Length: 313
Picture 1 (spheres, rainbow, N blue to C red):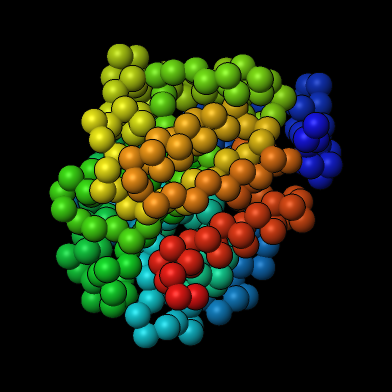
Picture 2 (tube, rainbow, N blue to C red; picture 1 turned 90 degrees about the vertical axis):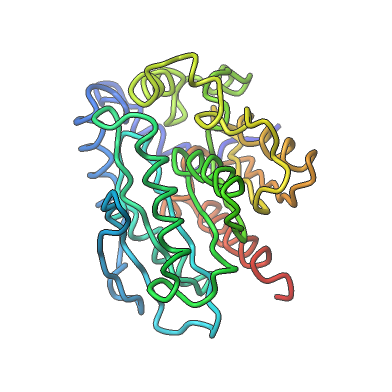
C-alpha cells in the first residue's frame, strides 16, 4: 500500500493542528492572506539567479504578466505561458516567482506568468478570457516574447491547470497551434464528484469543502459547471488539441480528475504523458522545498515538457 511522503505528512500535521485555520477557511480575503504568507516563506533565493524579470500589461484587457528570461537561451527558445494555482480566487504571478524561475531555468524557456483576474470579484469566464487573450497576444507579437511561434506551450497547476486545459481547446478551435500543454493536479470536471474527492475529502491540504467553496465563488451557475469550457472534459471532442503532460498526486482529491482527463485525451489520439506521483499531495509542484520527492517530481515534469517540445533531446 502506498504511503504518504513523510515530509508532507509532517507538513500536514503542522497545518492541521487544532486551533489553526484551514488554508481555504473564511473569506476570500483571508484565503489570499494565508496563501501569500505561505508563498513568501517558501520562495527562497530566487532573485540571485540568472533570470531577467520584467512586468508589463498586454492585450485589450490589459492583463498584467511577468516575463522571465534566462540569460542563456537556445536560438529558438520555447515560450511558456504559466498559470498559477489558488482555486481561481487567490495566488498571483508574483507569489509564483520561484516556480516560474525554476521552470525557466530547467526548460531553457521564456516564461510569461499571467495575473489573471480572480473570483469572486471576477468570476468565470474572466480568468479564462485573460488566459486566452495573453496566448493570442503572444502569438501575434512573437518578437516581444521569443522567436519561435511554433513552440508556444501552456503550463498550469491546480486552477491554473484547469485554465490550461480549457484554453488549449479554445486555441485549437481558433486555429492557433500550441506545442504542448502541462496540467498539474487540474480540476477538469467541476460538475462531477470522482471517488478520489471522497477518499481524500479531509486533511490533505485541499478538501472537499474547499472544492465546494471554490466552485461557489468561481462558478455560481452549477449547471454551467457541468459543461465546457468550465469543465474541459465535457468538450465535444478532444481531437487535435496540443500534446499533453498530465500530472497527478496520489493523495489529492483531484487525482481522478486528472487521470480521467489524461485517459480521455489518449483515447482520442492526443499524445499524452500521464505522471502519477503516488506519495505526494495537492499542490506539491509549488512546494519542492518541503520534500525531496516533490523536488525530484518538479524536475521530472520539466524533463517531460522538454521532450515534448523537442523530441530529439
